[in-house]
Length: 318
Figure 1 (cartoon, rainbow, N blue to C red):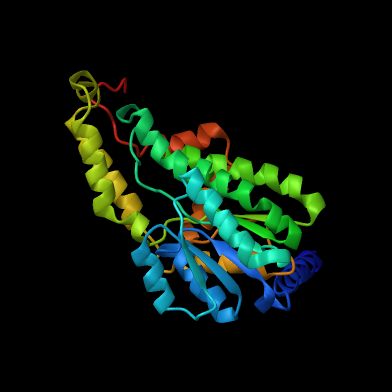
Figure 2 (tube, rainbow, N blue to C red; figure 1 turned 45 degrees about the horizontal axis):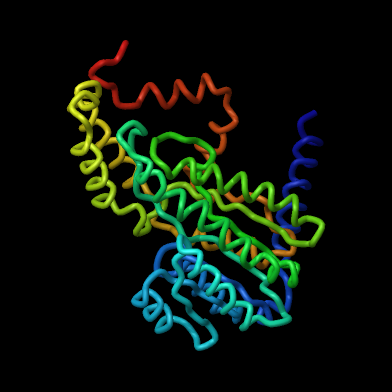
């Protein structure tokens, strides 16, 4: 009884593996624009695609990051300083890319630049705290996409967005989760719009990986800043123990990271080079085995899972 089912399942998995293993030819003729190449996933991807012989246009936030990347890659790779929160910088970078790719168009646009600081209780934060994440992760990403979209359409290429497992489950306050939820929504709507143009859109939803963005001291200092700036009546409601529990919870979140960031850049590379890329990628065991399944749970169950281990305020009703 079970044997036929197992055979069918095995054949389906084999077909899926074969289909996803097919890689495009003539990759060396294709241009790819990547943001956030100073470090982390963008830096790794730029190096991987450069080794493939693809024409990488690497956008960095700093001169130091751009210079270091140049020394570690071939002469084909070109760098550009880009602040995606600055519309003038974005439009200038788009003109630069357009002049380089010409009639070939832009095969790949990888929206990887991100800001991950600001994790903490929502009531502790101001509009400016939320804006930092939203301006980089969402609004800047949208601005760059809109400015470069005509080049991607010309090549019938690919657009890749670095979202997060926290773009599926908002397990902590601050602007990071809303910004990643926004990326998911924008990418979904764009994928449907671009389907008729032959452009494919992929979303990467990593779990926790060891990158400069998960540096514990940065998050610790930010949470301390938020706590110190709170009015006395809010501090009283939460209590010192809540702050201490929050520090421990945030430490666990930022330090339980995978030392294999290449799993993320490999997914990005597949989305750019595969004949049949996935719509979504979930690199990291925590993303595959926890965040992804729990995101499909009924809200009451996911709320219970998160609330039972969350810090308890001094004026809690329980």
